[in-house]
Image (cartoon, rainbow, N blue to C red; front, side, top):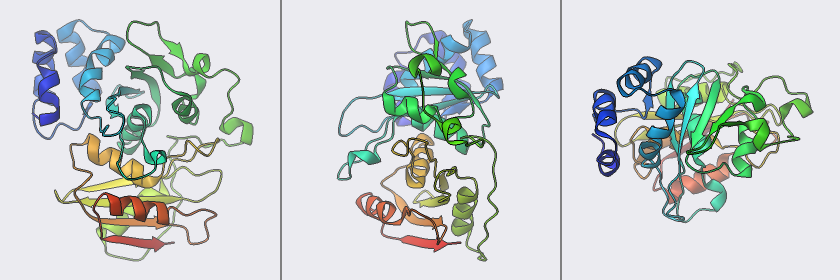
Length: 294
């Protein structure tokens, strides 16, 4: 079992421990449960979807990186597929607070990077802040997305965000988590560059058309892609580096052990991720940064 889960694990009910252990008891647990695994756990524990998601929040919060706030937030995103995806807040010292990742953003992006096409609900242990409500409003789930909190009846995003402003107000019809492929190409045999390009081709940037993607090579030898997720309100947009760091951390990797990073974006884009990405990577201890354009 991954070390970050051990102290929390002991606090779970024994029946839940027994049901989860075949899936979460090994070091390569990907911080998600497939629909089939979730059904197995629900059956063993007598849970419904919402009860299981709430029961998993302590494990999700154990994935938090909170060296600044020391406030651990966990989130569970449930996909239309039935899969469950962990999320947690992530903070980084010696960089601006704008680089912070909220737990809801983490769970959503985790699901998106795993190939989920639509979310049904978000379960979180604290009420979503305005930043996260706006970020969720970019999803193709719309304001019908259910939001669940412990000891509270579920509400929809529309309840949390009345009179919302979002992509529909700007005539945008391709929403976050809709499948896209922008079709850009770079001639290279380099796997990391091609992974970053693939991420850029699936990025969501309908307002600026500034598509971008990144690929991180961890010192564990694994590659972690990240895609840009733009927002109608601009400021809640999630940079591609943050998306890759989400996948790295949530998968059990070390965000301070990045061997090499490749950022790919359009050379004629209206905005660039280059400087912010390079400076944040330097703080994280990664000196091998490469930049490519299409």
